[in-house]
Length: 211
Image (cartoon, rainbow, N blue to C red):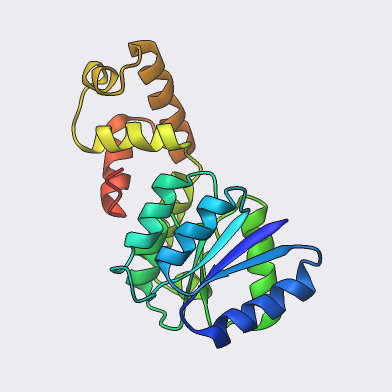
């Protein structure tokens, strides 16, 4: 990890994360922003950021709108949500919106480092609160993790499937060939570990994915 951006309106939190990163990822350039507007300015000036640590409750955004903006604008940059509050529905909602992980601020240093290594290896970090949940929630977590393996274009196609569109309609909307759409659908089914479009849509609806 060469460059990371910490976005949090509390300087003490930024200082704590900076300390963890400086020790655990020596040589990394650590950028900071106190609000989302500043974060966008930093990213515009430094587009090659490897990771964004984004506070869930920064004051100039509404809930997960900052995460959604970053996923749309910088789809290749993993965004890990950081929050003092931790509940299952919020974690699931953040993961469904494209977060690469969810870090409780109560995590110990070693656990934070392990989580960040996990994310930088291309995995989705899911806090233990979901691991302790019931079987249905564990299945939802697995679905979210599988959806996150889709490419940005495959997620767009999945969103069209959820909206009930046929292949030819998707091809028209995306201005691509039917062959391309079929290839995306096949890849989606494989990555989601399902055997039909209907199953893919059911799983997407189950975790609130709309594209």
